[in-house]
Image (cartoon, rainbow, N blue to C red; front, side, top):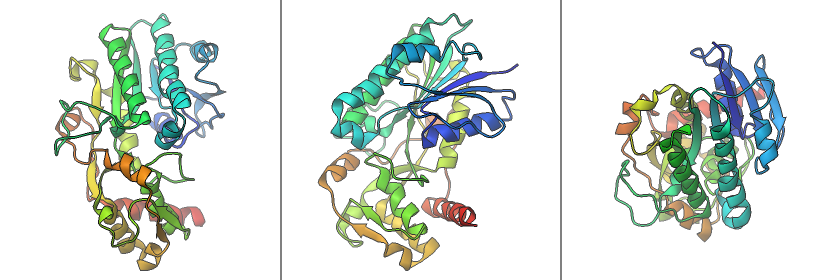
Length: 334
């Protein structure tokens, strides 16, 4: 039996990886993909896909995603959004894209005549946390965001939980760790430097670290909650296959597994993989706004619940992640 899956934000880096992974998923052959974004996405090679350029803040254009020749999707991956720094600098646009458009998508998912609630997989963020926090974040930790991006993500989460409680959708809310190393150009996210200080030096390009003013700066001991792209994609695919009854009764939020590493840990892994000459390409220009936002994010989570559902975690810390990325850079240069 074929599945039809709608992916919004499919023109972005993570959305395009999800599209590729869904196409290649051996547990779901014959998958049909509806790929939508404000810029026209690119379909995976050999896939059965419709690519649609759409303004996801427009009700008519969102409605059209559910009336294509592929019919009603049985799964929606809601992955579009304005990233953290962009949301902070333009509050109105951030709310329009990160909250209002998610509600439009929820309403269309709710309104179609599907035989059972459609799976609605939402990519949230650890930016929903902030303020005084316990040393380890558990499923019971209350989210109090300290940024516009985190606030919008939490608002969307609450709506998805409510639509799920009412039986209108089958929500699965995945709070992602910071993903590193991301390829491609820097995103408009406060966390973009976390990939940039590895990605750019491995390509022979200078990078800016906005935390601390030198390699010896104590601010580099700032801990981060991280996951590799490979593990994140694997977990987002797994999210679709978990039976609904295995999630907690009162919430569909899952903090996907990650690991803790400091900014200094990242840079030390860079040196181990590429030598001190790579580190010399990292320039330190302390930015109080970035430091405030990143410092508000939690850095240690209890992975027990997520692992009990079948999600997986990275092993070995930063060094194997940096080595894999270096290998991808070398491969692309050939």
